[in-house]
Image 1 (cartoon, rainbow, N blue to C red):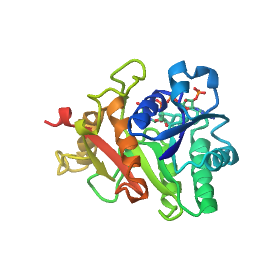
Image 2 (cartoon, helix red, strand yellow; image 1 turned 30 degrees about the horizontal axis):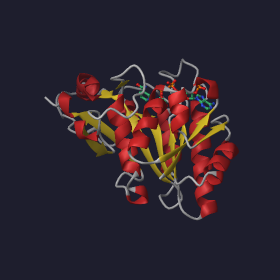
Image 3 (tube, rainbow, N blue to C red; image 1 turned 45 degrees about the vertical axis):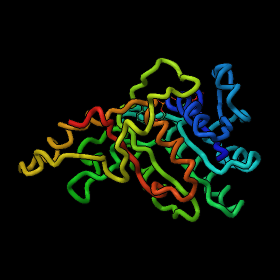
Length: 256
Ligand SMILES: NC(=O)c1ccc[n+]([C@@H]2O[C@H](COP(=O)([O-])OP(=O)(O)OC[C@H]3O[C@@H](n4cnc5c(N)ncnc54)[C@H](OP(=O)(O)O)[C@@H]3O)[C@@H](O)[C@H]2O)c1
């Protein structure tokens, strides 16, 4: 696929680039600070588009002018609490969603779109709660999820990667993508975290909180593994089982 990648100078985006290349995608980078791109990253990008990720019209033009079939958004960072400044993240998310939806309408085929999100919007074991209802961190993810949920798959083929902490195995992006880091190290599941235990749930009042607090950190994941989930899934195009889903993982090494 031809993929427009936003956030290619960041922690996640810079690791996504070698993973996308390893899965034979062609990558167009959308960056606001091209001077931060390494020579290696530049050499692997088909095209570099300079712009702001809050500029929906510029993102749409980058998609259409470069014949991209997919968009991956790793631009912007979610603030940890509502006391921190939200920065550009909600505006970036909305701009990418609008750009990809409008571009899909114009070319009459929906864009395949992965966006970075957070663990809090996954379904908790007690319906109808989300994890964010117990641990209200990174609050921007919930309205972002409400926004994207309103888009049907035939207008935007979206998936949200619902990250808990992402831990890089290597200080810098590796070219080629490291062979030992892949989806094979993970259990991947849609909408709720894989292998989530129901422990403590029966304890009155505080059971739900104990359940979440006691296992959330078991879902920390290696960054180089999760970028392989997204890059590999893009090979499936619009037929992916993760279209219209929230996606999370558990490292096989963390299964007790
Ligand atoms: N890392 C984690 O552990 C983790 C965990 C959960 C979720 N996430 C989510 O994953 C995403 C990426 O995180 P990260 O750790 O890679 O963040 P990061 O290293 O801070 O990278 C953020 C990227 O966004 C770009 N950006 C910010 N504002 C922009 C704008 N207006 N226009 C264009 N580009 C813009 C930055 O470009 P510049 O280089 O120009 O600043 C940079 O490339 C975030 O949404 C984050 O909330 C990360």
